Image 1: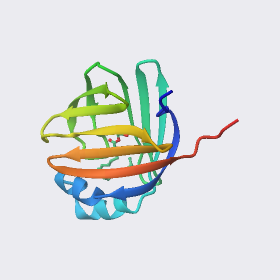
Image 2: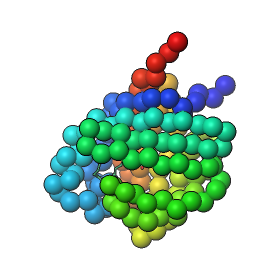
Image 3: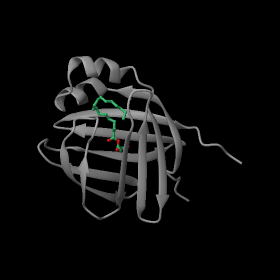
Image 4: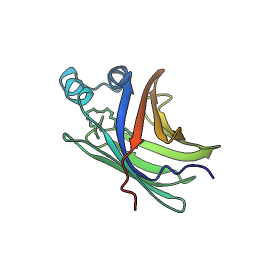
Length: 138
Ligand code: YOG
């Protein structure tokens, strides 16, 4: 049975985040704050619908979508751009393509060794984050 993306996750590694933010045009002062954040994800799934919440002590960001259904995304509090986004499954990978001003932009999520993996990509830069599961078990 494939492992589920659902649950609560806490970041344990973050590689190339600064270069990813640079291509998004994030200011040096904001990048300095952002690189120090311990990011968390809460992923909820109801059938084809996902809610992904990225939280931190500084800002939060939530995206809601249905797999296979294009939606308008506004990256409020991030780079504040309007995107046309589309999420699809490719094997065990959940892949989002974000069409807009920035080329080759999106992200990929998958589970590997009980960890949540995330690649954030934009214009040739790839930020790689890994999260450990912190869901309460019962
Ligand atoms: O995740 O799109 O899980 O949305 C990437 C930040 C930092 C603000 C976080 C706030 C990109 C300053 C969202 C960080 C840098 C820096 C906490 C990643 C932009 C601004 C919200 C993302 C997907 C996949 C779901």
